[in-house]
Length: 304
Image (cartoon, rainbow, N blue to C red):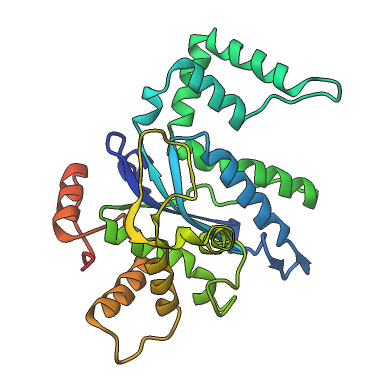
């Protein structure tokens, strides 16, 4: 029996989460699909563009992502109460940006968006529905994946599911857990032997960060910041500089060596532990608090 999402995602406290979703039957529907002998790499760009578009409107921040041929990973910061702090105009603006009205060839985009915003603000039920949708992590994942599935099915001239119906979510209860999971996500293509280095695969957050560095080298010494944020007055900035994070990734992308420092060895263990796909990651006291809050029993080991 599956655990309800309401028990996996806290509805009162802003937290980081590791999210993962697979294509049905783990098929390579976003890469080279062997049964059909066709390449679908372009669908990774569809998903990436949709991710950045929606994240600006929902109550989340994107800290890391990796889109592979048969699944994708996200590390997000989610604030379940943020949507209740937005005024009606803000909710209407976010909704029309996330889901712009369909236009005919002769319609004016700005005018139609303004009409749509006014209609939402004048309809209390529609406004409340929009607010709750934009403030829901499950709704974000639904609206992220659904248009990709429709588009892919049209391309393949077929019907049916594209992604598995449920997605994995694990709460990240400490900064160390967040950083270890971000590293795990950014290193996914390297660990899968798709590429040899962290700059060798296009559809990851570290690739985006390295691209941005070419334009703004001064960002190297700044603290890690979200790639895109739909939150206001809130920050999930991690207390590690981009320079240190890149150094950690380069170290972690190499085979473990005998001369590692204790801290480096701990990083190897922590990133490897993400494979277990627990419901929550953190130090012992954080896990005990989480388990007690949700009425669960603790299994697995805490992060060092």
